[in-house]
Length: 383
Image: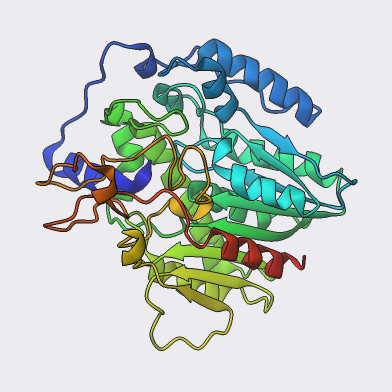
């Protein structure tokens, strides 16, 4: 979702223009947001699922699948779990983003829960409804619920979700460690500070066809403002404090949204635990003397992969929607002047905006090193 944020904010700053939404349900907010403070996670899942069913602007014929992939979920291991992890998705995404990692961790004996940030799961216009407290309070509430059931509590987050769980971990002594996938600590834009002002002036930054059942394609200005708040909060924490417990962090060298080098520096300076690991997808960082950092080459021409994207780290190659042979192909990828080939076997894959005069790049949506990532998670968590 935030892969186009740099371009959108810059365009608005220069042109002072706004996107005009079509007259359709997806661009009209629901009457309210669902509750998230239920006494049990089961009740939270049931009530949220019902709310999604009542409020979603469906975009396919398979309504049950759309509801399922946007509903919070829990996976329990066969035996009673001593360890649990709460997973928080990114801006515009869904709880399902963690399905591959959650399945593997549950098989390893973890109690795994993936929540739905308010404003998600139904229609892009619902991102106009939540405020910063909603996102912070839902994490605090469900972290407390999970901590009551396990001896060891971990939090995990992707992108904006990484910011939110990191900020919470600085204030919650119950948290024993973090898994951070492309955490959005340092956006690669100088215009994000404009987001709160823009959200008061215009409703929409971007309008796109909604054809992706697990990710909003259109972008209300309110969403940028919420992301800005998450960045401001986590950066304040990182300037003044260290997180001394174990953390796994991943980052693509070619992330189109974030500043990868700033994130790597923060890991080295603010996450000192020797059990921690940083997984870097790209060329090995030069002049780096930190044995906790592991690099995986992201230019894989034998697989027609040029670079790794912001999002692909989370998904196994076998994923049925975003995987190597998945049902959804993200062709719209910020590449101008070249039409996608008729033969999908001629497609290349990379980060948003990846450009080549002779190769059309779709978005890379799966991780060729997914099982190495699982090994990294096991190493950091002590499995």
